[in-house]
Picture 1 (cartoon, rainbow, N blue to C red):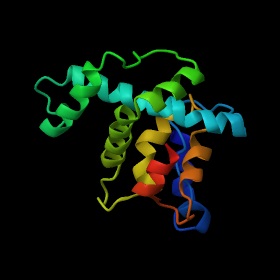
Picture 2: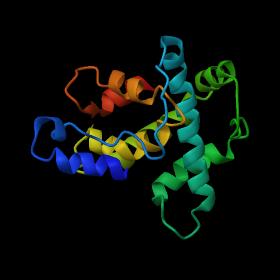
Picture 3: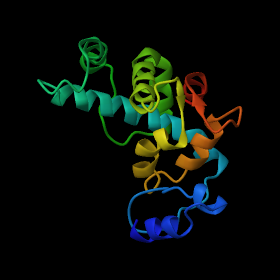
Length: 169
């Protein structure tokens, strides 16, 4: 990141400097190109991951108020669902089948994540900056992250609306 910020400072006020964004956090590494079938698999893993993040927050949220009371009630239903896939490595076929079978269990975490990111301003659209807290840690582990979020912006306005977000997942 040090090199990145030095470059950004050097290019301050230029056209190139304006478009310079931190892509991910960590040491520089080769990010393989994302091929189509990998891109199609990405939402399966992402939905499952978001569900598990929310369940984990619920498990740890005794007095921390990380979730509102209404959110806790929604997540409690997911948490208590005995049919829920436990966190771990699952085949893509199993993830796809579970999504179809337990569709409602996956919708709330996807919508919740949008709300967590849509903060500056809260306007129903995600900017590149608002998406960064989710993208930056994912890119080194999931090489289709950038292509996935680029594809979500169906009208190419550089913002992801809630409808576009939902359509991606």
